[in-house]
Length: 541
Image (cartoon, rainbow, N blue to C red; front, side, top):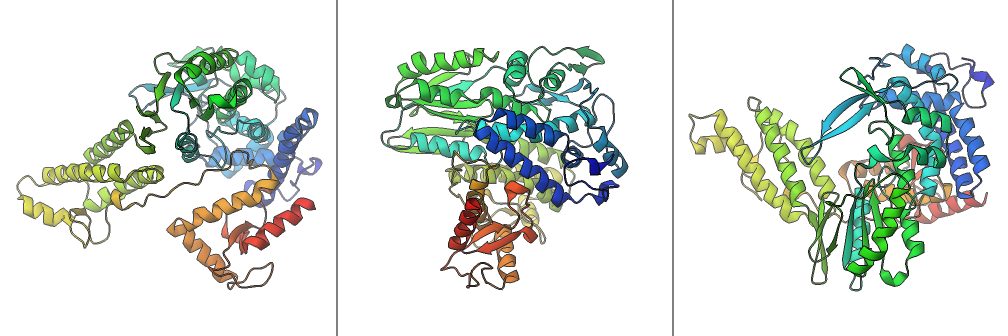
């Protein structure tokens, strides 16, 4: 591989995997992605195509793609060829192997994982080379998808989450004159039914390569099955393709219907809700438009799961229950989600029948912390308290099974303790189980709908969100304190003191849009005014 012949940051110093300067590599890729996003925003599709070719042919982008598939959670899961790239030598060799000339993807290895409703979800596992090729072309495609994406689409997008989707639900339904009717949309097997023909015609990437991926088929039980529709769940590029297929639904509704119909659209992946001023508007105007939009892409609505609901009756969305009581919109963890969580904790306890108390605490705390952090943005206090009671009961049964010959008082003294605020604390001298009711409920500030992580104009905005996020956690506050001490409490722009009165913003020395990381070495504390001026000067320059 002759890196010198390629127009990127790769050089002759790149002679093995561990010699790659990753900071430079990420910055190079992000700069090209920013250029692609700008060209897509200007609808200069010839420039988009040229920059995409430049990106996928660069050694730097290939290295980044290989790193992504060899350092994620699925790196040890092989495809049909049984290969994994686990050594530096294999990773280095893989960089030069990512070439579209003569490339033929292998079929996917089909596995099934359990769904929340008790069913099975089919996953297609590509080979390592196919994963790396998809990761490479995703680097070139994602800036276009972000630029073309619907304003209120939140799934599989950088800087957006389920928290933003439910916050938008609150914005759309919480006011006095908000719409009172909601269409709960459910697309029947969305990933499995997207039209290949539509994707090949409309996705802005190498069409021959895309068609090869879509038609690769899958292997299950040593049999090869063809694929005539859908994007395989498990492929790196599949979420991006699904977003591109579903983007445009919100614009269609906004352009086709008057404002008096009070239509708001919120989508996360293939789950979406649409508000309307009346049941008739949703049934006769909104639903036909959505059905027509989906039919062009080979998709249909599930008649059983798609329904129109009044907000006073309530509906479930992304694990939360949204319901209006008089003039107050209440959003709480759904009963179904809370029950599934308790069953998960109970089943984990059964697996730990013979474990020590410390091991039980260490095993359960990540589960409890993750679920609590997901729901802490809504009115979850009552649900937290109820689950604390149920989990304490499960822990009591776990303890009594361990000591069938001991009395209840002995068991309580052995496993449960008391502090100033609560009794029945499951703790030892070195560890303590998380108490859900003590997790503070914090309001989530929704991401601005028109932001783009690949647009330099939005860099300051995402810096502000990072600052707010760091202030809200103990680890984040420790990082802020470290930065303040490193700078000796002085702003590097104006040399004035940074205090609580002046306030501060976190600034990336190398902007994230250009490949900068969130490492402390790349962060600074600036006065809000200095931060705004710095970005304003950069925009003018």
